Amino acid sequence: MSGASVPSVSVERLEPSREAPHAVGESPLWRADEQALYWVDIPARQLHRVTPADGEHRQWTFPEQLACFSFDASGTLLAACETGLFAVRLGAPGEVRAEHWTRLAAPVFPASGMRFNDGRCDRQGRFWAGTMVADMSLASNAGSLFRFDETRQLSAPLVDGLVTQNGLGFSPDSRTLYLSDSHPTVRRVWAFDFDAQQGTIGNRRLFVDMNQYPGRPDGAAVDADGCYWTCANDGGRLLRFTPAGVLDREIVLPASKPSMCAFGGRDFDTLFVTSIRPGANANEHDGHVFAVRCGVQGLPEAPYAGTLPVAGV
Image (cartoon, rainbow, N blue to C red; front, side, top):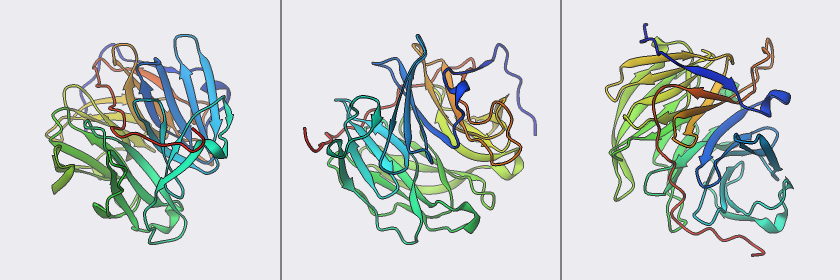
């Protein structure tokens, strides 16, 4: 394997995460109207928010594990958790109060010990998220991909047979959906034809076989050029693939288990990367969040197109 060298790349740890590493940092999301980065620590049941300009840090603790999320136009959180999808009104940092937490929908889990994992909105504002059996050692393929549309309807499974669903992304022209399975027994990324008007997918095909590269294909982002960036979990790097599935850039990171990436910053020229702290042999950077200037620009994440109700409001 060889990747083109990337000039003028900088990788810095984002404060204040250097003080308290996360067990499973995941799902970074940049909110341009706040100039703030949000992300989660799944086992800690925490949502974090940092404004890089001044380093201000806020965090909220949820009633159950939060894996991925989006916001609607009003700023209400759409949270994919252990038992389903919830609308959440974020109040003052601290515990999320029960009256600010409304259950919206839930899939029928075919196995015990399941939860949502990786998700994001498509460019039309529909929320897509996948499920998995939390105990990866079971290698259960009970996971599926779902769509939650602007009318607050949760689809039937659109892709099933997934062990560790990950890597959701959408091409800039909304013609391609990307999806990966990061389990060590799979390590593949697929592309699907995407009908943006109907919100449907088809023509599943192999995009990248990560068994040929270091690491496993975890969370991902698509840049303005249509290239797919994947976090190579256990490989300690970011890999960028062209729309043809050709590796053209590789950035080595200080953390061994990068988990997901998202473009942000004032000009969307920073790739924010979360990471996981391994149970053994962790280094000082594992479990922290990084800001990577990678020489390319990304695109804003679309908000959820529907309106989210919240109890007590």
